[in-house]
Image 1 (cartoon, one colour):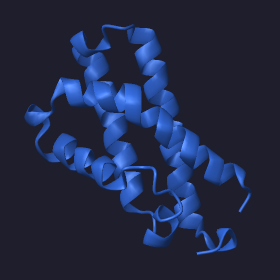
Image 2 (cartoon, one colour; image 1 turned 45 degrees about the vertical axis):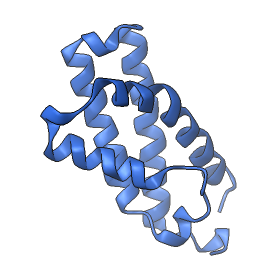
Image 3 (cartoon, one colour; image 1 turned 90 degrees about the vertical axis):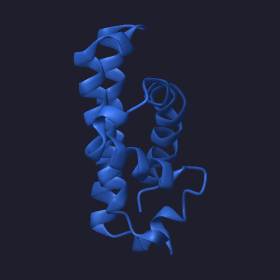
Image 4 (cartoon, one colour; image 1 turned 90 degrees about the horizontal axis):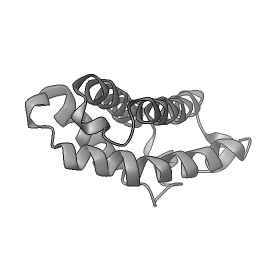
Length: 117
């Protein structure tokens, strides 16, 4: 898929992902390094990660293929756990997503969006 062919829906979903990552960063900053011990922060962060997974589900496979370094299956999968099995959410996994996965997602998606296509 050429850059010029990214659908408006894909672009909107990618923009939403970047926006939600920024919001998660803000929540973590406000709650501090022990955010995982704050139920309200955990709920807010989990909700935004759920939104990221939902947005990821809307992106065409050709567009996803432009970003192989992102674990799209994992993003979509954590969304399913949060949405349907909230009591099963592992805080260590959520913390790993926040600290290690989301920064990469934001960087790669931001690069794609900045390409102007």
